[in-house]
Amino acid sequence: MVKIDGNEFPEDLFYHREHMWARVEDGRVRVGYNDWAQSAAGKLLKINTRRVGSMVQEGKTLGTIESGKWVGPLKAPVTGKIIEINEEVLKRPSLINEDPYGRGWVAVIEPSDLENELKKLIKGSDKTTLENWLRKEKEIHKV
Amino acid sequence: MEAWRLIDLGLVEPLVAQAFYEAVAEALHRGLVGNTLILLQPASPYVCVGYHQDLEREIDLDYCQKKGLPVIRRSQGGGATYLDSNQVFYQIVARDSPVVPRNIDEMFRRLLMVTVETYRRLGVDASFKPINDVVVGDRKISGNGAGLHESVSILVGNIILDLDYDAMASVLRVPDEKFRDKIAKSMKDWVTSLRRELGYAPSAEEVKRIYRSTFQEILGLKLLRSEPTIIEWRIFQEEVKPRHTSKEWLYMESPKAGEGRAVKIAGDVKVAEIDYKAKKLIRVRAEIKGNKILSINIRGDFFAVPKEAVGRLEELLIGLELEREPVSNAVERFYRDSGAQIIGVEPIDLSNAVLKLKEYL
Image (cartoon, each protein chain N blue to C red):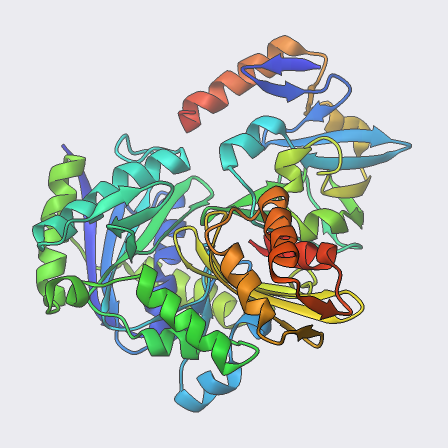
């Protein structure tokens, strides 16, 4: 577990620069919203996602979230077909705040170009890159 | 000094009022125009639902159709609202400006100081209430939403000249008229307007004049009067309008709803209702502020001996935090002190029913 300014980043995950995490499981990719992003967003009140069976493109919209009248995007960290959506999170989006890497997962994607796209993501074990990226994000968002 | 465009659209049709700024945001993202402040009033009333709301569940579509009220889904969050020419809208669309923080909390704080000061210059003692409210005392007097469109930051809000509370409540889909009355009453308690605070409504022109000058002073900008470009109107006609009028957008699928609902009134005040199935059905309605029960009503197909006993429980619950310990204690005390019996309902059922409201807040 990498801890940066009070936010957690498990080492076994990959991190997309648009704040989604990705965990590879038997050739599929489970994805969710990272700990820093959920704390910056505040309590999540609503969520909407593409449907099971939809194709999503890396960096494009997988869904939207809402907190305190801010609506923002959830960007897909990898390209592929959505094969699972977390129904529990659809009913209670604040699960993402409570447990972003566990019960708060958002979707499972069957990837179409996993090997190449993982190279674009930040490895959880690469603390230096994670810290540098997060520092820049905080500068941009002044958090 | 940074110069922004000022586009005063005047009185415009509902869809332009609600969505034209999206065309501006897209044009700004493409680098075709500069940072922009839009001012306008809706020429006619309409109903606006939040981005994630379930249209058919929240809005009385039959009523709206009869009254000729357009229904528009906005790209910002929050709850359903009835809007008309008694609101002056400001829509702030900016990219790469030191004046507009990219952080949402800071953006609200900074930009809503203009709204606060505008109200103060109109003679109302308004103040900012985090995250995104402007209040007079405890009453909300401006609704605001924010979002990002690619590289562009957006904040939209209103200066409220007057409010039609009954119309606001009438457009909502509710289980019965008592619930609607409760919503209207709660709105009167928690939302206010210039007419109500001042005894008269200033003209929209005066409001816009003050807002413009306050905007420039507080943010240190210069506003240059402008007209929308042909490109912006084209983006509106070809991209924004088709999206907003499509069934896919308007009837956007939302997660399955449970056995309850909540109507956000203002700030942290909500009117909520849930159904809880024990051996008998328990229906709980409450007005909640933050996590505190302001008023509560418990009904169902159980029966109580004596029949007015439940009223005593309702009294005991008022003012409590909506948490297990205070709620359970109140229920225990109710049974102990009153000696009442509620057939088909256990004490734990009453506690659980009341606490189920939390799932919808």
